[in-house]
Amino acid sequence: MTTLKDTLRSLRAMQATPPPFDPASAPQNPTDLFIDWLKSAVSAGALEPHSMTVSTIGLDGTPDARVVILKDLTDEGWWFASSSLSAKGQQLTARPSAALSFYWPEVGRAVRLRGPVTTASSEENANDFRRRSVGAKAVVIGAPQSEPLSGFAESEASIADARESLERDPQLVSETWTLWCVRPSSLEFWQSDPDREHIRVLYSLTDGHWTSGLLWP
Ligand SMILES: Cc1cc2nc3c(=O)[nH]c(=O)nc-3n(C[C@H](O)[C@H](O)[C@H](O)COP(=O)(O)O)c2cc1C
Image (cartoon, rainbow, N blue to C red; front, top):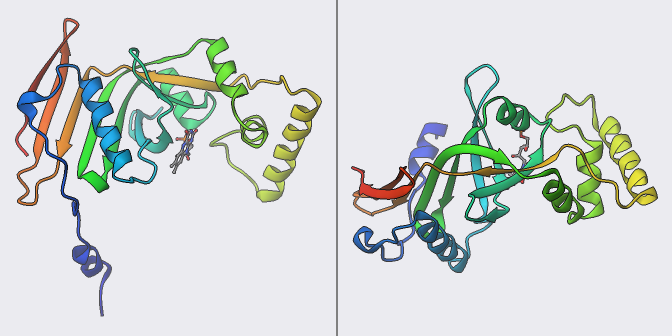
C-alpha cells in the first residue's frame, strides 16, 4: 500500500530551470530586484504570482500566517488589504510587524521579507474600498472576517443585507477596510539549483542604506 509519506516522497520539487541570475550584478536596491523577479514569474505564466503569505504575531505571541494578494509596491513598501477586525487585523494592530513570502515555482524563485507595518490614511482606505465590486464590498460589510459562523444561512442573510444597504447608498464605505504596508528591513532572494546549491542573497537595511551578501544554501 502506498502511504502518504511515499506519495510525498515521489513528488518532485523545484522542477523549473530558473532564468540566469548573477548576484554580483544584482541591483543595489532590492525593490528593483523584486520587481524584476515578479515580472519573470508573470512572463513564465505563473498562476497568481501576486499572492503571498503574510506572517504575523498572534495575540498569544505565537506565529500566524495566511495568503493574501499584493496590491501595490511603492517607495513605502509592499501593500495588502483586509479587515482591521480580522484575526490578522487585530494582530497587526497589537504588533505592527510582519513577514511576507512569495514562491514562484515556474521560475524556481522565492522571496521573503520582514519589517514594520503601517496603515494607509482613512481616505486611502476608503478610496481602495470604493474600487471594489459591489459583491466584494458587500462581503467586507456583511461578513465579520474571522469571526465564528453558525452556518451559511447566517452569512447569506448578512451579505444580502449589506448588498441592500449598498444599493440604497452606493457611497457606503466600510470603516474596517484597511490597507497595510510592510516596509522591509531585510529581504532574501532565493533561486533554486538542480544540484541543491541554491543561490541566496540577503539584503539588509542599515542606517538607511541597503547592503547585500550571500547566504549558504
Ligand atoms: C490566493 C488568495 C488570496 C487572498 N487574498 C486575500 C486578501 O487580499 N485579503 C484578505 O483579507 N484575505 C485574502 N485571502 C483570504 C486569507 O487567506 C484569509 O483566509 C483571510 O484573510 C482571514 O485571515 P485571518 O483570519 O488570519 O485574518 C486570500 C486567500 C487566498 C488563497
